[in-house]
Amino acid sequence: MVNWNSLHEEMEQLKREGRYRPVQSWTSASSTWMETNGRKLLQMSSNNYLGFADHPALRQAAIEAIQTYGVGSGSVRTITGTLAIHEQLEFELARFKGTEAALTFQSGFTTNQGVLSTILGADDVVISDELNHASIIDGIRLTKAHRKIYTHKNMDQLEQALRESALYKKRVVVTDGVFSMDGDIAPLQEIVELAERYDAFVYVDDAHASGVLGRNGKGSVDHFGLNGRVHMQIGTLSKAVGVVGGYVACENILKETLIHKARPFLFSTSQPPMVAAACLAAIRLLEQSDELIQRLWSNADYFRKGVQALGLDTGASETPIVPVIIGSPEKTMIFSDMLLQEGIFAQGITYPTVAMDKGRVRMIVTANHTREELDFVIQSLEKVGRKTALI
Ligand code: PMP
Image 1 (cartoon, rainbow, N blue to C red):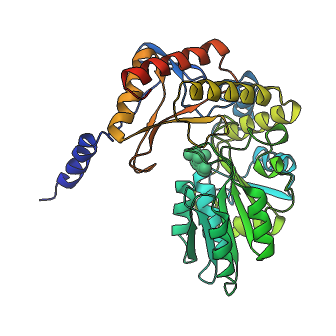
Image 2: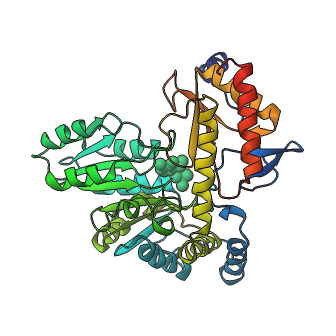
Image 3: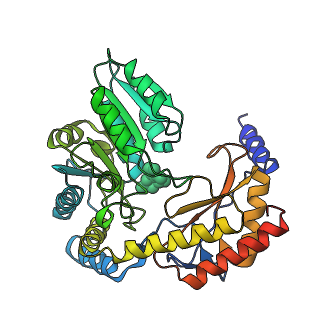
């Protein structure tokens, strides 16, 4: 008789190693205070960088789209699933990113899967930073391309890999713009220069950089002044944009090819219209003003300095992602639980997402956090840091 004993054993093993994570269920959503089990917690783990997830302009746009279109698109993009609101969103995303075209997908995850699996074939080589996001790793695994992984941000290794890749048909260098677990920025200037020297394409996943870095949040390419020199800019619509979905900003020919070949585009129903409408409202807000982004950066710098002044290790953080490195999975989860007792939700991130001894609570600062709230988190970190002998 079949049974799930192997799964039971696996879950027990996770519990023994302190890596078992119950999923928190929230009864309200916001970039700062959120409620769970009748208790309000200060949110330090949401990707809702600019507070767009509950912004009145996005709510209104979604309501209007529901009234116009209903709540579902009825099929995949290539049948009835391309509504005018999808095309408008793509048009404005391309303008925002300064590219010829943009194509949306249901999530950032499926964007990476769809684009990488379309552009990479058996005669190609993909050269990828070791800390790139899981969806990039999975996207690459779907292909028959040759793979080379370079140590995080190691430009000598990248050059070596490029030098050894002359005989492949296509060379594609893939990097996150901002790395999601450490909050550091990719050396995009160097990457682009090397790629140009060795005739390679550049692919940047700007999930954590769109709405955060660059003029009006246009992303890491704009931040480094590299417009026109990066061939594929991936963005997610789930973080600073505050909704859900993903896109690639690219040239027309790639968009055309993806429409014909990218499997998540061809075989999975499109974003609901109210989702596309809310995303469009967010892009328009970004175009109008960078006030929230300035507040985001001022909060992030203030918070990071405060945490560092306690003697805590924030790793390589240089963006609103501020990890506090703790160590083993057990210690990390204890630290995260103790912050919870103080009224702060800061998710513990442990192996295999990060190395076994590099467990961390990953804090994400948003534009909406007040200085008082950030001070409260810093004071709580000090209290918990002392109790756990980390400081
Ligand atoms: N790329 C990176 C770098 C990410 O951090 C994430 C979010 N977890 C994704 C892609 C996937 O985006 P989404 O959540 O929109 O699927």
